[in-house]
Length: 396
View (cartoon, rainbow, N blue to C red):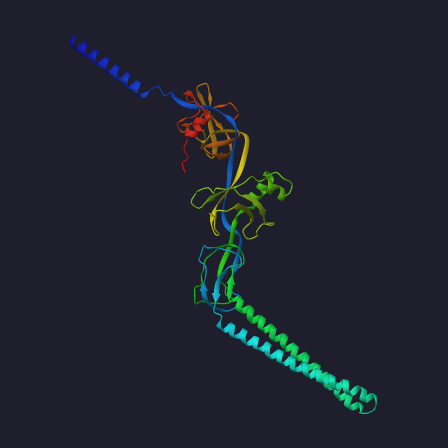
């Protein structure tokens, strides 16, 4: 009896242990998962392109004459007006040339006065001899000699007047050079870099400009599309001609180098007429207002062109997963998951735009899909679409 009792006790313990082990190895694996209905929404995505910013007008300022910089009258970044003096060159030698040229004009005037007097005297002699010759009082030779003297005097007068014209031209050129020593701003704008300092010798042939004046009330943002992107743009944008298509592009955004969005939107106004054979790209130009002068010549950033989608099927990005290069979602049939292949058209703000594979109203698992497989039993937990998407934070 004692042995029988021990055997029964051991058997009971063994059965209890096996039952406990079996229970721990096969827990109830059905878990709740958020489930949403596929919806149609109108969303806007963006296509991004790196851009460089230039002032609407950028004028290089160069010296018109050679000379040493005597004064630099502006500073980098200063706003200047058209005609404002930026640099003053040394003018001592130029002033001496101008004074000498002025003296040349005075000398030419004296020569003209003397030549005019000679002409008058010769004319008097001709006038005096003419009636005498007619009366045969004097010979014709005397009259012809007088006429020759008159012609010579007139020729010298013409030479004196020509010399004065040359002297005046020399003087005006000298005065202009003195004026060129005052280097002025060609436009209203902002002063750029000043590579030359006081004492620097500058000339019209210098490869580097004295500075650049940029008119930045409006700035241009230049960006490029490759040939494929350009053809996609032409086919996707309404309009018959390129000009019409440009007018139909919605206003664009500018993201600055620090990641912040510029406060005003821009308009794409022009596109170059041909593709660059070296880069295979075509250049676009967007215009942005810049009354506050927040943008400067040489800024960089990113142009974002809106890409609207109207009434498209969307699902949360968290509902999608990729398997062997194919995107899938899990449909829900009652309480069972079914892996379904979908084609994603775009991804925008935590949403995947579905081109095919789903229909409006389909029930899908909205999150946690990496733990599922086809045929998994779940506890569907209906979830509001918008609240779910809004709670998802972007990774970057």
